[in-house]
Length: 504
Image (cartoon, rainbow, N blue to C red; front, top):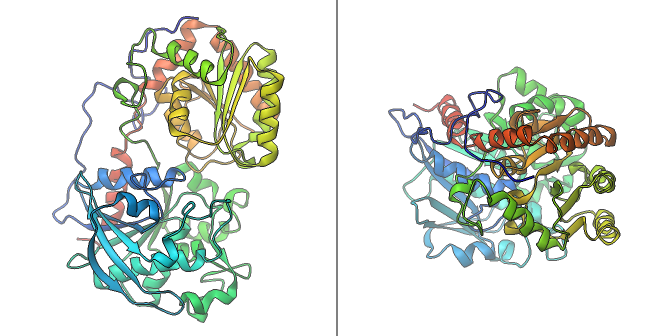
């Protein structure tokens, strides 16, 4: 079918928190208080310099949105990729060693838009090839406990003594690599409150109990009410126990992790935090650049009548598929059990048998990679696969696909479903975590209740029926593209949380 008009419209399918006409002016400045609080945003990655996942995107966008209301500064390790881009750096101070943690140097730079970034310099810990957490072969570094304890201690030292003349009112920690900072603050008697955001509870930063002394963790903290987790030391649990408040990246995920199915063994502690009013969900959302009307990364100028079809053919050509007028499905994710890769593999052949095409991009489980490649050889005109990930390829797929498959068994927030909707690709997703909050069933995408093949097949059948109804299909696309996934509301919630932690 020819792609219909993509005029941006509101839809009563989405709540006011998400649905808004693109032409409506959005409030640009968060609510200000008399005091502009100072926030130290601690992260292990930021998209300006280094990115392995959604944390980097959040670390790049949220501090910038908060700037009108808060004096936000970011701190992260001085990986080689950071040093190559974060120039010039100015020396702030030298931080002493502690226990088995080496001394380090704190430096700073100011980015073009005025965001101040502190960089923890320690070449023996961060000056290596590979990704932030693993070497070039994908193996976790054997000293990751030292590497991220050093980062966490630097955060606590900035809170205690300041960075130059600047001292934060609140430290905002993100996931296990910075979570131990909440413990260091408590053990040093520093009253600066910590807020911890859990982006994925499954990654906890677990290390052997005999590492306590090397990390400077007091023996008294190794217990059920401290950092101990089934006989191991848990960085993330330290954050949960000692932070003043904990957030997750969607309200649905916050409600899911207090139960055993998604609690990763920490559900009891999380349920206690929820009862005490110390656990809440704040939705992660998108950077402003995800708007096809003004996307400088798009190869084709946005044209409501022809833009989507051009990208569909571009994607087909990229993957060597036939230029058929067929529904184009996509899977853009890690090839992992959590992402439902096995369900997609089972559904792919049936999609082809019903006249559809599918492209898959990602990497992960070797068996899944081989299975996708086998499918592409079996159906060369209808199945395209790329093992690996390139952001521009993913963006083109979102722009060209009709449907995005997201049968994740759990998904704390997810960003791909938002990217897809902004580019007119309707997500087909398991009703979990942030997927349940950002996809409106039958209006901007399709949701199914059980993470199994039967439920996914039923959803794909629904999608194919919708594709055959041009009016319904085009209407859903328009509604999806009209959704507002901007940071303003979520950033305001964070600004409010900072102030409830004892600020003026």
